[in-house]
Length: 164
Length: 372
Image (cartoon, one colour):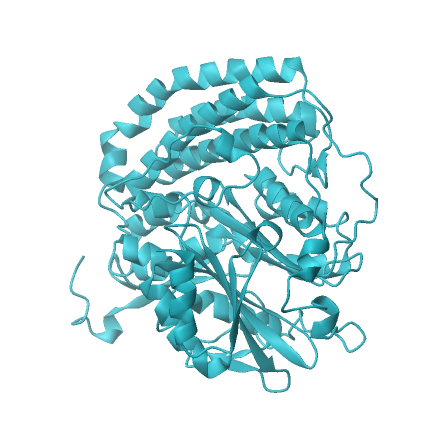
């Protein structure tokens, strides 16, 4: 399967938008931005095409948090990153555990570290941290950065090409 | 596997395996629900060596965080060195000199052999054979001596630097490596007689812990666990990094999907690592081992990047987000053992308790890496 076909098929799904990344600098081929409700259909699409879930994590930003899903295709080495913007006050995304059993622990870990609620998770109890522990990777008010401070020109390639 | 549905609840009992059980290799605890000798339910309970390495990354500078990398996976510390250093280099846009890349490959592959040797000895020890671990540690000792000469440590290496490696290798290192490879090749016949053809070992591992390729993929298993299930995936070949595309090596896979095949895959991988080392030594170029003008306080530009390497246990990924400051804004470590262990719950269901020990061993777990 060619990359162009994959992009074409992905664009027919309900997604916010899609960015072709520069593998040499970013280690990923595609970046897909989603609304929480669009997640399951995209993951189902990737699962059918033999992508495996590498990990689930989050980045604490202001005003919105990001959940990040890394997928890799074992056949051709393609890497796709899914990003979901979620509310910082009541962070919640749908759980992938029913679709991909391997997501179970990654979601529990992300819940430990960020307090994100994975809706529909079968057993969202603390995995690495003690019960009733605070969420250590949430940034303090003075440390937190806006999205534009991390990715000044998020959706064009100018920033990447500056690097020599 | 037995039919478990009919067992009345009151005849089952709970058993804690660990956190100090010898076969959990570290401080992993497994909560088992047993019906006699059969496992009805097994839940790994993590967190006993959790140190929050990802938070430590956010409060240390890039260079200060380097030594942490040796503390995650103490058996294959150089793989973590490689992943972290390369991730920072990728984000900053540094390309290390060619000689440094060769030295990285040689030392990482030596470390991989050492890790597989420890696994081999410890796994067979779990199954009750005491002799092979003596031979395995004898061989591993040679690697530790070789690596100690250049890295200065024997276990928790911190050898790679941004833009190169800390110290050059010399003729003595190369000669010792050649001697070691020759020696290890001659030892494989001993391992074959002691382990591969040992009827007790075969009985304890063949047909035990069968992971179908679909199950391995669903759980995101990588490394020998995935390859033992017949899927030919190796980051070194499929997502080539460093200079692995220069070398000719094979990716051993198994077809039985059981613990025995995972054992065979790892033994064959040692041979492939030796092939890579030999080729790298042959082609080793002269030149600098370090870029001259790397600042002490490295500040990658704003943005994010992912870098994956093939560690001894599977795909090891570092996801790095930088805000342009001296410290990472976010650093995520994708530990291969974490995903490999997560399939244990499904795998152990319905097996004998003694087989669960064999399954656990065949996954090659290093708990500090899983707990991070």
